[in-house]
Length: 351
Image (tube, rainbow, N blue to C red):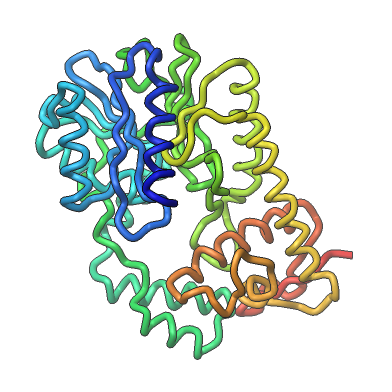
């Protein structure tokens, strides 16, 4: 994305959000070294200050952008009443701990992702995390040379995750705060197990995090291989329908990245179609009846770039997507594992 395109997106967001009662403004917080460029932080009127929907990546550049963005809105970080995190990813949660330290704000998150954040904080070291990742890749069927390549790449351990504990663990429909006209948690699993939106019923508006984006197809799936124990693709498709219904009923959709003002029912159909094509892709790979590991299947799928050009650090993302789609096919009777006790597990199409 060029700087001109990013600026157009920011202007689009601000123009669309001008008349939303209870919204103070929106801040684009830069994300370093990730394709998303920035995370859109929404600033709502609270009972005793302001409330942030997401916080942004944890580095000094992002902190400066958030601080200056609040100042431009006539606010200060120390006046933050609460932070609502749509999910645990560091481009959304990273700065929450720093904001809390400055303001004593509460941090709210869906209970599933809050539990995962506890696990992430408990990682003793990058070495321990890399060991876990290598075992996980081996369970997917990654061969020894691939494991060594991943070891050399250093793994995905990141200290950009939020360091503070979540104060409020939420479930679907829980009232987050009566401020800004009443903000309620809306569970939208798929991108993560505990991904959630925040809905303003009175204003007919919903902040959707990474659940739906105008151009990018959000990643769906868990990172524990070979199968997705939570069947997140199935949950994602169900929650896509939930958001589509809201959009059809006149709710405005406010995502955390990219353009705000689009035809969301049409875009949601495009996202559903994307996953149907990917399901067909996995079925095609399995169609010859040859048992394959998750690694084998992922290598043969159609990606935006050739598998050989995907860097090792991105293999877990591809395997996770593959796992989510394979699990959907397993649970809907289109695939099976003939020898479930085999390690690594292998899969075939069910005839």
